[in-house]
Length: 271
Image 1: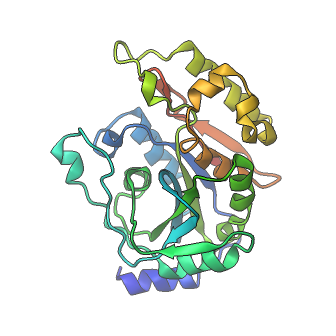
Image 2: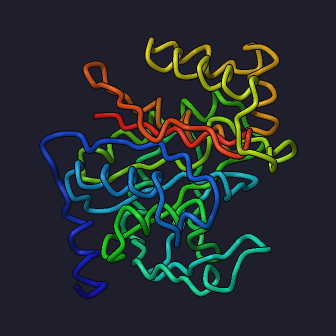
């Protein structure tokens, strides 16, 4: 399908039911080229979804001063990592962007000024996940940045303003990790640390009981959660996802496993 045809679809999208929402624990960039239980879980989940008209991704790996949305026709694949084999750097994800969807986001969010960005592209939090969900790269995709100066409550409130996109067939993906502490990885035997297990279980309980205010106030949840979230960028995409849950919608957890001691691959689907 040609680029102008894809953008035309986005401009005129409509759907009766809200599109599901995903939070993906993306983990290691090698998940772009390795076949494992996590990539299988992502692929199986994609099969359970209606085909999106477009994708909006909130990735842990695009932090900005202010809030921006990518607005180019052809977003480049950004290899924002080091120390991996050349085969990973060779991967390209040539999905089209959608300036029209970017403008919809800018116009549809009223409480926060949104800038249109043509310099970024798709970082690995976006393209690694999208490449396993939709390997044909034939669905337009844009990214929304994380304003690093704002609180979790601020991000939660902003995310609620994105809800209108769900009825336009836009799949919103938060890409990060609930537990993510690269400073204390377990290189020895991959066994999760006790604090990582405790933190993951605490967060899952709060998710399943819909106690989102406690998750927003995560700094009050004790030492295990503080170890799990030494910095907020991998956690905030979860907050975006939870903010979009409708009153009668259910949450399904999948890929619920912690690797390398301190990285939870736990994912969830809202539908």
